[in-house]
Amino acid sequence: MSGETMVIVAEKPSLAATITRFLGGRWVGRRLLGFARHRGRRFAVTCLSGHVLEWWPRNDPGFNHPDYFPDPREFDVRPIREKRRFLRAVERAVDRYAGGRANRVIVATDNDPEGELIGWEVLVWLRKRGRLDDPERARRMRFSAYTRRDILRALEEALRGERVDPSMAYSALARTIADWLYGIPLTRKLSQGSDGIVSVGRVQTPTLKLVVKREREREEAKKKRRHYWVLVADTPLGRLKSREKLRDPERARRLARRIRELRIERVERRRKRVTPPAPFNLTDLQRAAGRILRISPKKTLDTAQRLYEEGLITYPRTATNRYPPTFDHDSLLRRLERAHPGAMSDFRRAGRRDEPVSGREYDGAHPPITPTGERKRVKDRLGTLAWRLYDLITRRYLATLARDAEVVEWRILARDPGTGVEFVAEGKEVKSEGWYAVYPWDRPEERRMPDARRGQTVRARVRVERRKEPLPPRYSQSRLVAKMKKLGLGTESTRAEIVKKLFDRGYVKRAGRGMKPTRRGERLIEVLEERIPELVSVELTRRIERRMEEISELPPEEARRRMEEVAREVRRAVRRNARKLDSVRVV
Image 1 (cartoon, rainbow, N blue to C red):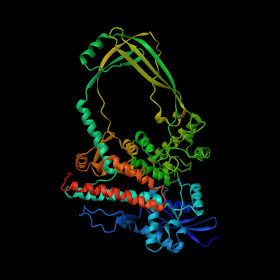
Image 2: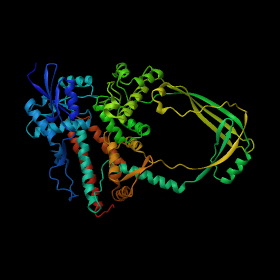
Image 3: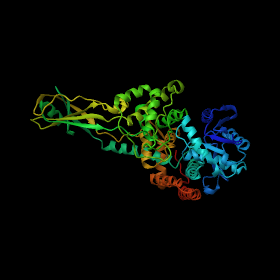
Image 4: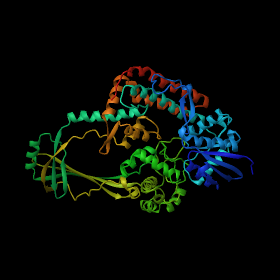
């Protein structure tokens, strides 16, 4: 047995306890420390609490100095006061058990840029304090699920030499510094002459602009909005509606009085195969949960995170909707027979397809969001909402492996011989359930086709209905998150939090199932569009996001230089525009 002890640093206490248990050890939560043995090696396990350090300019003069625009090289790590005990626990573990040697430290944070930064910044801090040698020599556990097999596989890869990736950390650090350089000076500037804090943000403000712009489109549409009238005919074949939108109500009423019977001109039937949807990435999960479970993107992410930490689903903050070639569906299906027998019963009724349906997006680190097949009492342990989300994720996964559904789309076209007014009826019939059996929420509303034939004449009682032209729909929270993704605003991890902040800061409010800007939110966008349109443009934010994403693909030194270049680009843009906000009052 090796005489050396290696230190594993997890992202949270609960996850450190899970890792310790998987290694057959004992976790002492009060001490934030656990001990375990695996394959002849000894391990000390400790933990962080997300970010325990923050990046801040060393010489920041404070809130009353809105014209302070630090260079990126002035930023340094400093402890977050309320999380010092976690930092001290890591320092003690590294001092005592790793002897200051980075190659005996294993970072076990989430495998994404933010997780890489959380671990890497702690290594940088330890080196700065003289407690660790070269941070780039630290080992790295990379996993997509908190299951025993995933954790042990990740540990084996770390022991074989998997390293921390500074370039991935620099990519996340670029966002952190750019957000500071955009948000802090402009927030300070706007708050000086206003009532309370006027918060702006690099992604937050262009997102608010989307909501404001949609409300303007609705107001403009209202000015041009007109009523129209349709004729509705009740017949032995069912209800038919006129194809034409009638603008003159008197004409509509005259036609309704004249029409007594309709002649069937055409009967159409089309059989159609409906392919299952692709597996979930986070944005698609948030949209589906908003539509089906009526929960916000933030609530969806928080609940999915709990399921992930319990080892019930794979990593939720993924952009991937494409299965990797090595994904073992057969093994997972066997585990699901015990983990979710109800969904598996429906899956057997649906039938399995030859190859799973897969999307096109792959983030390079994680599979789509799927169940792990672990058997736990989800509803008893985590509550009803967690169970419903788990059920949704499991059924979406099974749907991608199920057979196509078959639907008949039908349409009947009729005409009044006297007036020439055309009427139509249409609907769908499900002929073969396929994947609808396991994922019923996408099943279309069925309307049986009546027994109609061409040339048939039917009696008709016709009435007039008044309608309004529809307005552009307001964004729901989940649709706004999807729009942000399409425009390249934010990341999978941050979009839901940004939408929540718009509510928390009083910039938007609920309007039915959608959202609308408050007067405060409208006024903020009006001021910024008038004074500094460059900084509220989607184009600037999208360009910066693209450059940040590229950083993770570069060698470490080049990644650090690119990080500084991107941050300086933001700094120049903010500095150039900030003076235009002097003496501006928002509300």
